[in-house]
Image 1: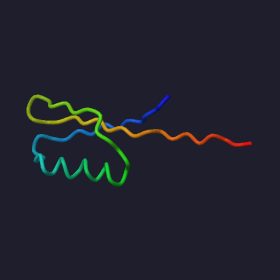
Image 2: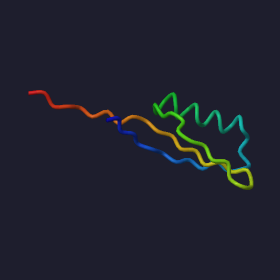
Image 3: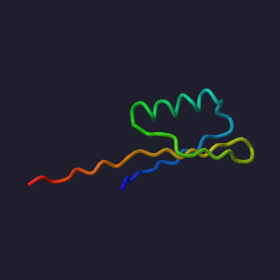
Image 4: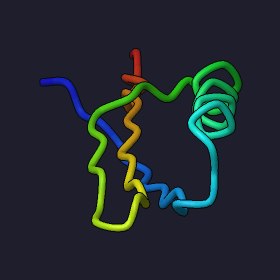
Length: 61
């Protein structure tokens, strides 16, 4: 079973699309996050859900 951890980011309406993209690219490159969902709110704000796999290390005998 694959487990994920999630991070929710709120992007205000005053942030341009290019700036929001740069922010998400930075999270993806350095934090290994991937885009899970984007919700566009009334007024132009965005709520972005990022996810990444949780890697469990199994103990060997």
